[in-house]
Image (cartoon, rainbow, N blue to C red):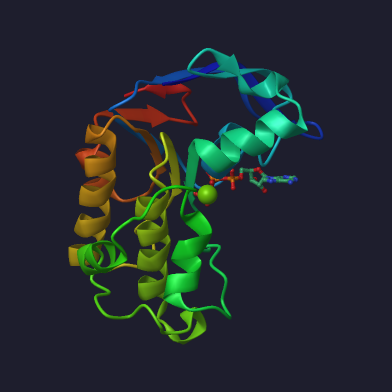
Amino acid sequence: MITVKNLTKSFGTRTLWRNLNLTVPAGRMLALVGASGSGKTTLLNCIGLLERPSSGHILFDNTDLTRLGPGGRRRFRRDKLGYLFQDYALIDNATVKANLDVARRRGTRPDYARILERVGLAGRENEKVHYLSGGEQQRVALARLMVKQPTLVLADEPTGALDSANSAMVVNVLREMSEQGCAVVIATHNDGVRDACDLVFDVHEQREL
Ligand SMILES: Nc1ncnc2c1ncn2[C@@H]1O[C@H](COP(=O)(O)OP(=O)(O)OP(=O)(O)O)[C@@H](O)[C@H]1O
Ligand SMILES: [Mg+2]
């Protein structure tokens, strides 16, 4: 479970949000909505410890993430966090399989063939990522998330490059991860994605809809 408490973020004199409060229980999916520029990506980046909030707290299962030192931040990101970035963040020059290996946790042997089949990339293990289309790369990023099995997923417009069938597949995979007890936060402009979530939070209005 993730709880954002009185979070404020400013860039210079410009405040994106002030005293924002938000909770995502384990097993739930929350859509972050709001106009472009309202700060959805910035909020995900604060929760994912890529950016520091100006003030406030972020609690993950009773640990205050804003108070973690470098080692704690690294362990949280390595052991708990799954991130689906807007730009996929894959290793371009490596194969699909090598990109999945990066996410594999010690002592686990995920079934790559089953996972790649699930995201519509059966048999593509040995292809270099930079030859794949944008939508295929987005699906490799999703496969990598399934390999990692995180307890918190932060997804930034995960269906941005996809057609409607693949968008539905992404949402279904994220739904399965949430049913396995993961908290899922999805920044999206897509009404279908939003409707598939259990909770909707408008970042501009700073309230649940
Ligand atoms: N490092 C930064 N320095 C200054 N301003 C920033 C920085 N990062 C983000 N911003 C500003 O914060 C605002 C919110 O950006 P953000 O990317 O979080 O919006 P968003 O809601 O994700 O928008 P979109 O829907 O277009 O993805 C923008 O006006 C952006 O220019
Ligand atoms: Mg954004």
